Image (cartoon, rainbow, N blue to C red; front, side, top):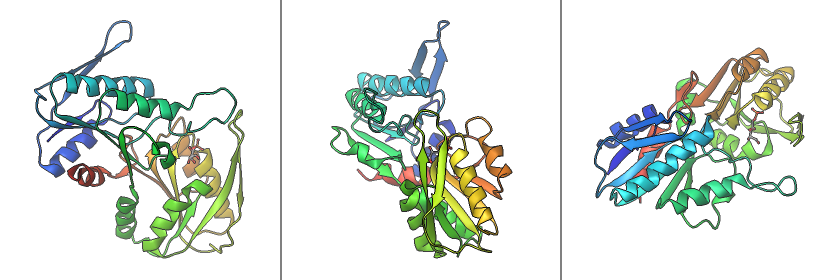
Length: 292
Ligand code: R5P
């Protein structure tokens, strides 16, 4: 087995290779003068079970192009199998037809990865795991929650309330609550598909006065969702509010927005490299690729 850290996941790939104790092959990536993507393996991959790790955050389309070029090229060069690990899967929120005649982008992306010859696709806390139902490639959705739980325990957050900023995140909140045991709650969020504006209401009957609260979400993009949740929780009397997310896209001033609305800290994993990579998903990936 060898690990190939793609250009978008160099540090994470390195950590996974170290945990597994296997060799890694680096990648040369550059652009042609007109902006086209160039990619080259910097070593032999023939006969190998290759683990390619490449997240697909901004610039998403470049990272996707690198991913599919690497996948097919590895097989052309004689790799035995290619397992594609996409810690953050771009386009995962476009998982159905919301408005007539639009693309279901995530479906096209998964199909594309399969058609390039990958034998297995692994992601972490994909926005809607149902997108893997019925796909031709063997696809699995891993969870970063055990890694978060370890972190919260180290930070003495046992007994903190786990809070979901929308109904989709309730599963993550309950997973965390199984260990922290502080109870869990959720908001109901409505988003205007055209303007992107959101409205949030609290349906769960839960007294959080004087308690520490963790807001857990899969993605922080503009930060609007989390900032609104943090502000509402503070207004409801929470003592300290921690924002945690698996995929910290942090578009624009998302981080400042969340802190400005009262969060004590913003915590993310390293599926997307940035300043809030407090929790690593490397052990989760290493464990999964060991099991076939
Ligand atoms: C959407 O349902 C996701 O789970 C996140 O809540 C959303 O992507 C966050 O986006 P933003 O940070 O732009 O509010």
